[in-house]
Amino acid sequence: MLDERAKTLLKTLVERYIADGQPVGSRTLSRASGLELSPATIRNVMADLEELGLIASPHTSAGRVPTARGYRLFVDTMLTAQPKDVAAQAAVAVPPIEAHLHADQPQRVIANAAQLLSSLSSFVGVVTAPKKASLFHHIEFMRLSERRVLVIMVAPDGDVQNRVIFTAHDYTSSQLLEASNFLTAHYAGLTLEEVRERLKNEVDALRGEISALMQAAVQAGSEAIAESHERVVIAGERNLLAVQDFSSDMGSLRKLFDLFEQKTQLMRLLEVSSRAEGIRIYIGGESLVVPFEELSVVSAPYEVDGKVVGTLGVIGPTRMAYSRMVQIVDITSRLVSNALSTR
Image (cartoon, rainbow, N blue to C red; front, side, top):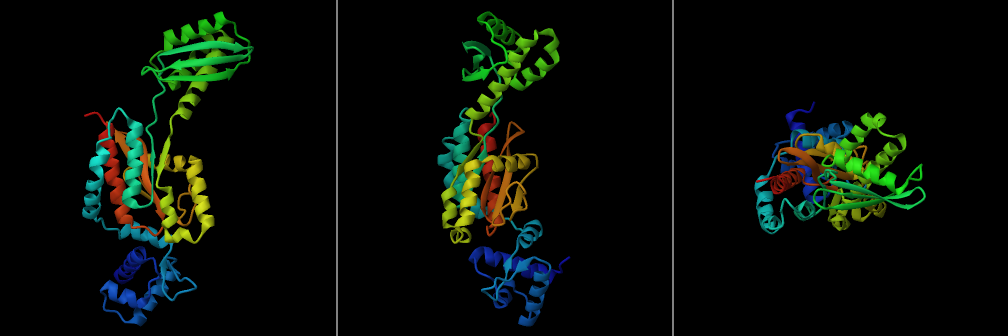
């Protein structure tokens, strides 16, 4: 446990380092903290904080910088919100954004939200798109050649997904028609996940080969729908090129751009965040999903009609203004929730 004096000095050090990007010395701390302490006392407290792993001393400077552990303590116990500045900036950015926030165009909402996050933070904005329900209205099978079948799946909104599947049996056109008619008559209007579960339970009532065909079709349809919708939208990756903490380390930048390119790790991180309430902050590799010591993520879930359907956030260096990022993420989450919900 830190006493109030140590907490004040740590808070001042983190805030000065976030603002200036330079190691903070005892003289700067003495002036900025407002504490009537001698330089020797400040140096002693700094030594204690360093021993606790909350700050570190770079080899090239007599000053100190926060560690990931120091940032975590700062975020958990000392963070103060400054909503007015962020709200004012968001108010400038929001009118043109809101002009395009239509609930019937969720992809445009998501794209604009990622741009808004990036613009307000000057870092990277990332948003997971709402998972689209895989409903189907009609399904059709077309024989292409021996053991090759084209599955044509039509959603209630008219969206069409095509997928070629390879089957264990060579089906005749009449068998394919039978399977198509059965699926459409019994399962139209259900999601593919519901169809899959019901097929498992009803497999005894169907001929084995027809059941296998239907299950393969359902799996193919699910994959086609998943691939046809971009699940993660990222904006502002190039902003990291201007970040002092990254600009001198091209190796770190390459790793980060690989992360954005692959998106899989980001998806896992944001899906974990969507199961939590409110703002989540991951600092300096705390998340094993995105294990970069130089990286922090501030995220929050967003809702549609009261149900959490996705996550959005800001990705930037550990030296970021966390109180400001929390406000940016919170405001954007509310905007997206309002835009996508029924009024």
